[in-house]
Length: 214
Image (cartoon, rainbow, N blue to C red; front, side, top):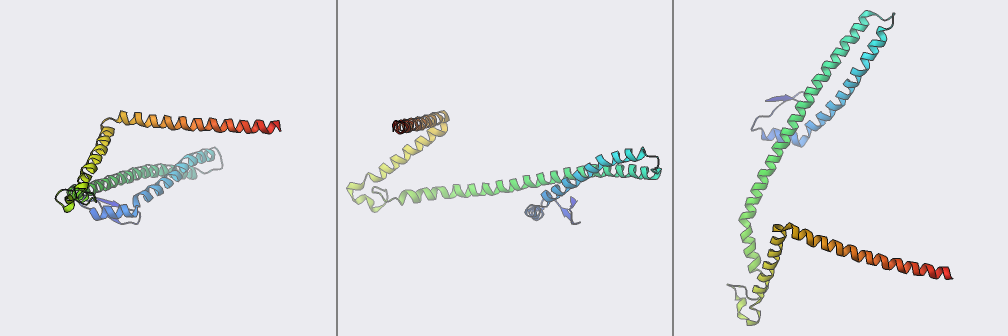
């Protein structure tokens, strides 16, 4: 499939045209073309509205030649055809830009899929490294179990992590509970700020009354 751009070159948008699509997206040609077409369409639309009035005014004059009126009618017809062609080209450019945007979104989704696959592969390694790299006592399969006073360190850390994970799961599984807690904290902050404002207002009134007594 070929399309001609503003510099006169034909571009190919074949199903496998990865390089050409990337080149068009990097150069941002279609948005510039769309902007230029919109400006040209405004000029042509303005001319299409103005020249019929000029023709009517000139036709009412007896000294205006018939050939000139015919030329104006021909010009008005050309402007209307040009407006239709510009509208068609603008729609085509918009369609091409939408197809390029969808193709770019597809490429981004593929890249994110590969990144998620790599994260799935390396996630167990990072978990193992983080667990066995903790500077606490009681880590299994290490030499940190020799000191009996530090045997509960690893278990305590795992218990804290389990509690945090349970709280996060509750927030995701029961969003209403999280919303209630957030609303309670907001009301608490508002009440505290309101009491502070009232206290400052009382102090301000007291100082003002003292000034008035003086």
